[in-house]
Image (cartoon, rainbow, N blue to C red; front, side, top):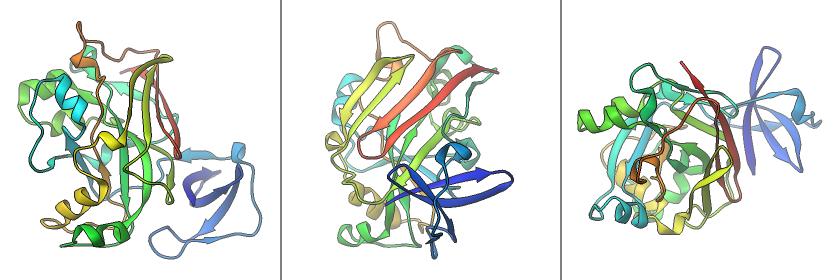
Length: 260
């Protein structure tokens, strides 16, 4: 099942996509999603971020080859931080380079887990039932702020720094998906979620042991190797480029980069 959130005229609602046709729905994916009988043209609507998350929880250093490229040991437990929910934007929305250190903004292609129901204290075996599905994300980061602060939330939480979309897909294996990031058409990251240190169910169970997961919570599962700051010399995002993040079975999230 492929779930989208869209706007048509002044109305925002969820829909199901089947064979490139969009079926508007009553309700939400977190209660009772009821598709209408008649489909509408996808080109007649504006796709939005597929969820408005109450929390955006993120993992650092969750890909083996990413930890290797920056010379850090694999973490013994998931390394967590958060992004502000106000950083969320959707497909084709611009990512705005901030006035503060605009020349140090980096890309991080990521698989995002979307939680489907309230959950706490889950075992790994129970975690899968709490997952609604998966979407595409990019954990855009201000490296100058990140490295000067020594913690990550401010660097990750600028408005537009959490693009999500284009859809939530419910029937894919989150632990075995090809993932790619392109900047201006150039491939910058190319990997597979099978390189993650902690699986999706391990991540969800771990987080649920110390905080209640609410419906719509988004969990970014970490980024693979190929980020801009690890290159010699570093390569960062520039106004005028198109940032494309693709995950097999889910789709491509495209966002233009613009100056403040």
